[in-house]
Image 1 (tube, rainbow, N blue to C red):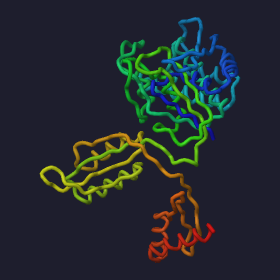
Image 2: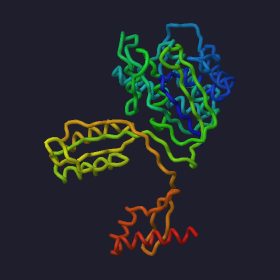
Image 3: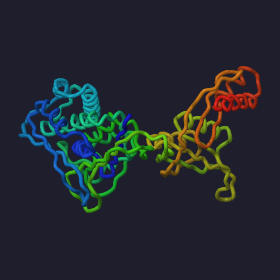
Image 4: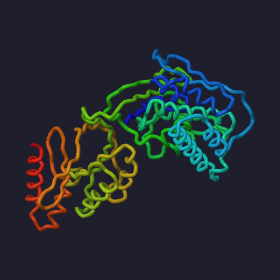
Length: 385
């Protein structure tokens, strides 16, 4: 499987996505041929350019403006008749449906009533279909992204001046890590956000990759603060290097909860998706003994787990910050023991039986837990020789 990781440090738009993928090696002629088959009457081309001195590709769409509107079903009909692979077609439909769902939610209407103005529709059709065709040409099976820079300030829309991110963009980026940096303007568009919402399996630090391709897609403007680029890094997940990920750390100092409440909170946090949760004894102000509650979480789970801490404990606030995590490559193997099958976690640093498997077998058989663990280790070492 190939993975494409988008570095959205200057936001993400549809044309930047297509430009980055073509710059990484997707055949521009094949992408444009697929877009021509949509029959929108638009003209497409790719320009080699620079942003802050860095070479990149800029994807352009030109067409004669009209006053017509296109509803979702019109666009899906165009995609259905176009010359593209089934995977590219399926992904394009998925992205447009997510975009339409967001617009419908913002305006409080049924998805069938959503219409795209001619200008936005042609751009969106070209960008979304172009991105999906390019991903297919590069044989990408998985998409991930960095935290997304959405920009700041305001944006002019048909509904007047609105804050950044635009309403549909905010809906599409729900549960994804976002931030604002750079010039006061829109850096992430609804089309770019829709591509991530529909196709990206996660957002955070780059996973361990064996990189094969890198491409840069240029935005419209050249900023003084930073290079206005979207980077696409493509490769296969690596089993040769420790996994490097960004995690969210959530902490609270608590001196007025009972052990029962804190223990229950740990259970709830782990069940809700925390990577780890712990309690540490500390002394707080006025020499009061208390507990430091620390949770390690995926960036996309930060807000939901923080809300759970505020609900299940007596704390009035939490601290949150990002941290880098390094994880050894590991695999799961099963061994057969006289008591039953047990999963073993194996890494370059060592091995260990899965506690829950050992616990379950100890309860079912009445055999002491330490004997179950010893049997699992014995069988693993015996089979390893």
